[in-house]
Length: 329
Ligand SMILES: NC(=O)c1ccc[n+]([C@@H]2O[C@H](COP(=O)([O-])OP(=O)(O)OC[C@H]3O[C@@H](n4cnc5c(N)ncnc54)[C@H](OP(=O)(O)O)[C@@H]3O)[C@@H](O)[C@H]2O)c1
Image 1 (cartoon, rainbow, N blue to C red):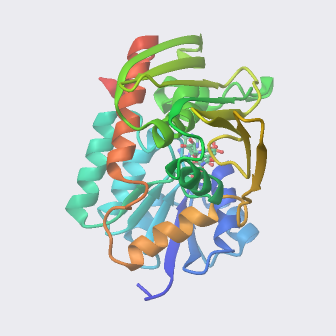
Image 2 (spheres, rainbow, N blue to C red):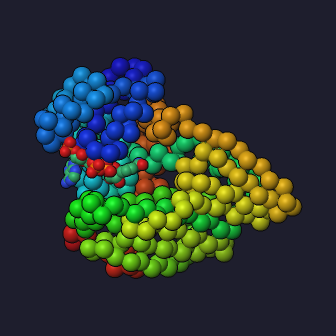
Image 3 (cartoon, rainbow, N blue to C red):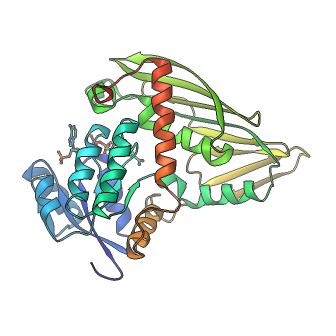
């Protein structure tokens, strides 16, 4: 491993792999040196598009190679555990897409594997690391909104008719809106309201055994309430609020805002611009690489405890709404 740059290999060549490959160009402590696909054709195509020197036509070959220090796992949720453990058992650090695991037993096994192989495993919860979230956390910590009593977040999109074969609609892939995008709302709620949740209520609508629309209410021991919704077949404005005793913040793309609009109870307003450095992934790549370069085996920000807390919450919500995956058995 070089002392100042982490050599990354990407696993998978889909939508999010493209976003990562674009972001890493702007990062000074990491470089993209390899891509692995299930097919030679996709590996070559992706490699050509991003000028990646090494292309593998299997994930296994990249795991066994010595050209990378770390792997970014960009396959459907159901493949996260196998791909991550394959890489980690070959000594590679892993940045794994969200949700890191389909259920808690998978997440526990993945962190166990990281420990056993003495490598860093971090969930790619990029939204926790962008400037907008850091600024919001600072504002809340400084008490600018007073006591935080409620949050709301809606991440609800609709897939096109010709996309109904997508893995987000397949239970065997850990499909459904809760795991796909509800994970952001639950993280968001925990950032501002903490972890002392005393009661969860939830309602859902379904498509093909997955939740196509889920609404969750979380009650906290201090009386605060979070209201989080997710959907794969229903569009709602992608926005959220953090409400305090002195006023509230309105956030477009609530989990990773680029602008914070504050409305205080005394009538005053303030707008704070907090743009990403690039496409929003740069900060997480920099942070992860920094952790590896420092020899850390856990991120102090996107911690294993946080990933496990949210994964357990999603298990509990799935139990309430009656969504199960083959992996639960
Ligand atoms: N952070 C974010 O903002 C964000 C946004 C979207 C998605 N994601 C996460 O990223 C992961 C991948 O999502 P995506 O939207 O990039 O998916 P995608 O476009 O379908 O790409 C997934 C890639 O994984 C590989 N793959 C391996 N096994 C597969 C299988 N059984 N079915 C389909 N593809 C398979 C394929 O690459 P090869 O055939 O080349 O091996 C495929 O191109 C998901 O866990 C998702 O939650 C994160």
